[in-house]
Length: 230
Image 1 (tube, rainbow, N blue to C red):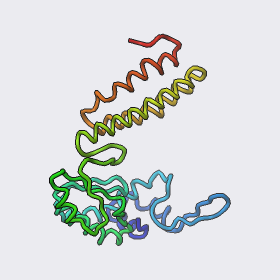
Image 2 (image 1 turned 45 degrees about the horizontal axis):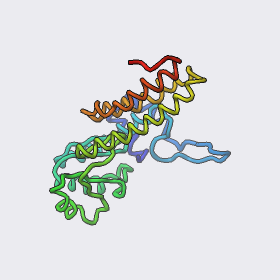
Image 3 (image 1 turned 135 degrees about the vertical axis):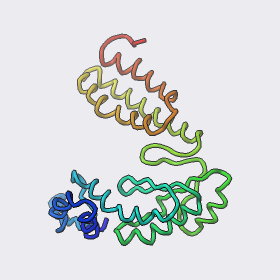
Image 4 (image 1 turned 90 degrees about the vertical axis):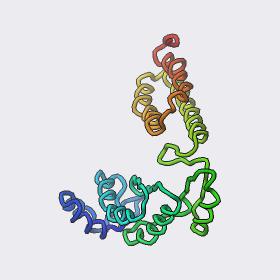
């Protein structure tokens, strides 16, 4: 994010936050790493409580500029996504690559995937030829969830559930001797992962049964010293 441009935009878009952000970011910020001093000169500083707000407001003019293309946009910090026809998405991509650098936003084609239905794969490849964007038909991971065909989404969830079950088993071994620490890790660490997955991928509750079984038959007995619960 171009810091100078962002601060000027925030003065007009959100005056109530502009003073504190200007006081924080108008000069380069010293970062101390292993005895060396690094200057933070662009973007927001990781760990700053106002970083997400500054980025979100600072990038708004670019988002509004991209509304000229008939697509539905979804942004989370610097992760941009758009949904629409392939022709409109190509318009959106061309505009973001042209206008983005003025705001300090440089889209990375090598990390960009275009998900289309199987019947549109060839036309999408032709339309996006030379952009460096990967066209895929089955699906892809997006912000910790998955979008695409039902087969791809179910396989993605199953893989994540297998990973979660493994973590529960490891935590269960700790629970035998450190139940309080294991319970805290369960509540404040593991639960957030699968509740996010369940919230962002609808109609997937049946796929969570192996995880529920692991909690009921392995973790809770290890935690409480009791037999598995029915």
